[in-house]
Length: 134
Image (cartoon, rainbow, N blue to C red; front, side, top):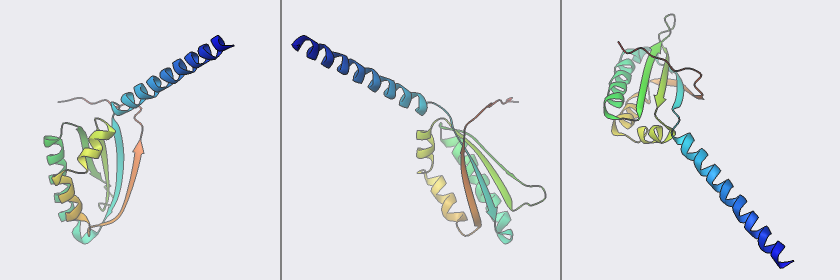
């Protein structure tokens, strides 16, 4: 009976090690996946020009200064210029979390806080991310 107990403990330990390794590998794999987010923003029409300038400054700084920021595309609806959509791609969730602590992001948030009427953030999963560089 003692042999079975030791064998059972060994098997249980082996299963726990395999589970831990599996979860650890999944966590690492998830950290290496791109983190993609869409921001839908409604801007106060009286401050649209100032908002666009602040967003452009922020996007340029983020892409040029942060290796984890892959893409920041900002567009507005042709019929409703106060409806802005930002498509963001980061190297990982950790890169995004780092991004929102940067001085240029904090400056952007503080600059536009009274210009933004609403903000909707949506995390999305990429199906295809293809681009032609020039």
